[in-house]
Amino acid sequence: MATTRKELKEQARDQLRGNWGWAVLLSFVGWLIVYILTDIENFFEKREDIVYGIVRRFGNNAELMYLDKVRVNPFAWLITLVVSVAIGLITWGVIYTILHFRDNGTKENVLSGIFSPFTRNFKSNFLTYILYEIFLILWTWLLIIPGLIKAYSYAMTPYIL
Image: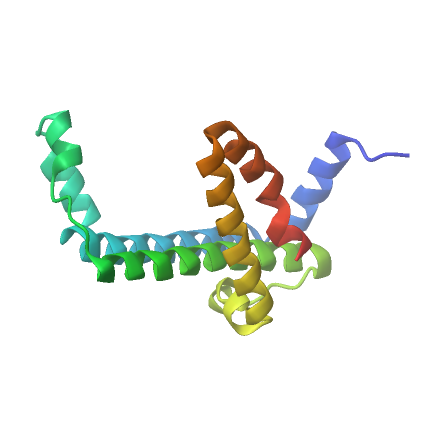
């Protein structure tokens, strides 16, 4: 007999009972690391902080917002590439940690869980993420709609790795 949605919801609540703080902390620390990496990338690309840029542009015209400081900097492109891969692997780390908790019921240290794709099976995680991004970019270059469809179909990649 198939499990109903209600039963799945009850199982999830039972498993998270008493562990909400850990789950929220894991998600928050993952988000904070991603935010800091994005802010560093933005600083190298545009020479400004994200929050400062939003506040400064709030009063500007919409046209000036997109034309502001447009330049090609190879170092910024390299930083963008490295940060993008790091953000993807950190996101996968949060996913892996939650899946590990769901399967085994053991809570992992938050930071070691977030950085688990870098420490456990790095080569496989790295190559899979690079191929995931390359194929997604190629499908999106073909047309936007196939790119969206493939993004949806590739979304389960970290779950089967």
